[in-house]
Length: 318
Ligand code: SF4
Ligand code: SF4
Image 1: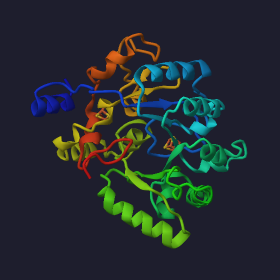
Image 2: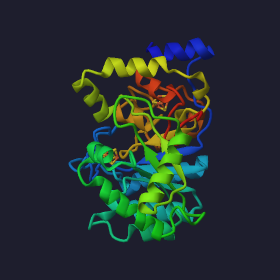
Image 3: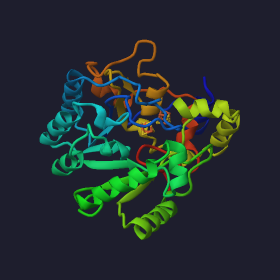
Image 4: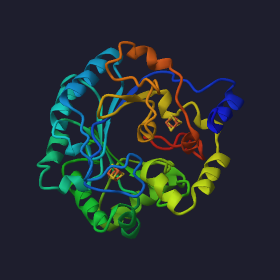
């Protein structure tokens, strides 16, 4: 039994279980134009894994079965999967609430044409990563020139109505630059809003803070810096039982590019699929019974319960 499981047993008297499936998170590929040092799925330009259309159709079938309130598309850079537009169109035609996690800079690539117009015309919500409002911080995490490109794209999104039109929501995502917890989400949101508005005239709806998980490239970095033990200790010591109800794994299923299903995208990064030794796929016949499955945890899970908590939707108890 890992330390997280022990903690959950001690606090709640039973193992961590899901309570419903309100979100289907779909990771449609691991290729990315960036190679950020905190990336939990090790995405990079060299990765070739991409979700096929047949798998997207299975996601659609299971969506009809479970009617999630949100379909959350992630990657890699989702825009690099050539089937993204067809997938989004089909989901929207079937009245699903859909959001795409974009890294912004990919929208300037010459191979990605008129994607902002496509997102707008199909009413797709965007969740855009911008690890800080300062150039030095963003460029150190994501690579030189990334901040300038991100600002350019945010202006294009505002021009298209994102962040301004109530039907075109634009949220930003903050990750700490290193091995420490994010500050309070609501106060950081105020800083982001005033800095981006005053300096660049950029507006957005909501800031989401996400704790760096000891997974993927960030895990490697922690080991290189000999700070793995120290960071895990910080996460453990910051355990907050109030975060347990909102843990995203309790309310979602995450589908990988190859159709395997996971409790969350961090378990995907660690290759801990639902079913574990006999991994389950999206076409599993018992899909809806997974709404009360036991969740596969590890010590990385302390990243979700530390401080104000963390999830793909932001802090859990800000
Ligand atoms: S963190 Fe996002 S933008 Fe950076 S490499 Fe990973 S998927 Fe790409
Ligand atoms: S890492 Fe995944 S499985 Fe673990 S607590 Fe967070 S969301 Fe749940």
